[in-house]
Image 1: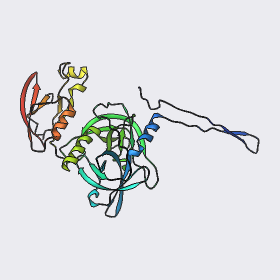
Image 2: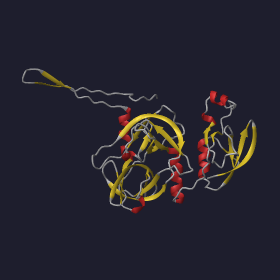
Image 3: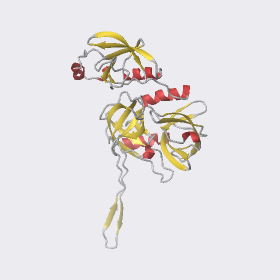
Length: 335
């Protein structure tokens, strides 16, 4: 199915005629206008919430995503906020029903928090897509929770500028998997979902790029890794690899040719940059192909990031590296 901003329009005209005092006839036409985007928004509204907190007597609001459930609890992803650990947390659903919430854990490096609630009613989980398959130029919708003051439910729409990696916390070693989108996002929309036009979650809004027109979201695949860490450990431990890289499988033929990579090579990641202060500097080089980590095959970026979530800062790992057509093994310390 080929998606577009407007795929279907249903227009029903119901004219109502009336005459004014001058005998002129005025015809009022009621137009019922529907698009796939508006239907998608209607379908996901019940899975978007407003998160309310009190910090030093000041009320703060953000948006949240109904993400998962177990036997007795429902879990809400939202952006990290000061005061979440002070109590007074509540979650308001689109229906205006409000329930108490408690903080499960937060990850400051990704500015993400997980909350737990026990609502006395059934909830609808947000459907998840994959942030690994999105491409530059795809359409995406940014949505926020309904305001308890104005009853408005913010939404904006744009195209994905680029899937990327960025250090959300300037002092962090970890570069999170993010998605840039040219959609206007207000402060109260942070913590809300970034959706594809099928209504699937592809990321959670966490910030702006510096432009009023550009925002970015944590990719849903990284959200899955964070959720597992929060539930199993109550915190996030991972090892950061201080370099930039990209999947060979996603490279086009001309890119492989420019990098002297054989066209039939589809596994591994290409090192594209190494900061001067990186522990990898002098060990790895730009243009190296990372094929394995501790003997485990690195199929793509997603596989490498999953491996890093299984380690912690200070661990030493062994990479199988291809350089100038020759394979070798090198040891690297994770940050």
